[in-house]
Amino acid sequence: MFDIGFAELIIIAVVGLLVIGPDKLPGAIRTASLWLGRIKRGFNDIRREVEQELHNDAVMQELKKPGEQLKNEADAVTTDFKSAVDEADRPLPPEAEPTPPRPPSEPPT
Image (cartoon, rainbow, N blue to C red; front, side, top):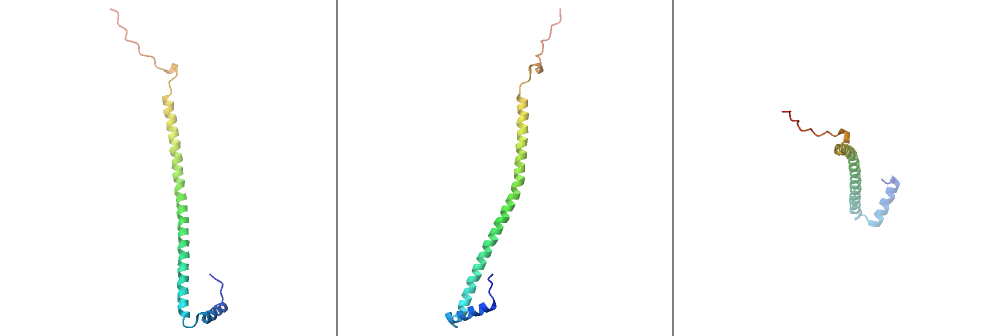
């Protein structure tokens, strides 16, 4: 995480020993390590949640593709059906209309 070498750790330990004192130094190190662990867990939780959201977003995009395709196909079927209904409702031209049946002629008596 940090680029700290052995020499820097010795300097930090000596300064901590002089500032905090030998009797409180172990407790301070424990407290600092607890805080550092909490911070690391917090960052890991945030990273995991972000990765999960990105994964969920990718899954949703994959699910939207077939949904859009089905919607387009349904629209095409609806359009075809409406055109067929409109064609069936259109009146027939006069030459295609059937002639009314003639009344039966009476036989001569």
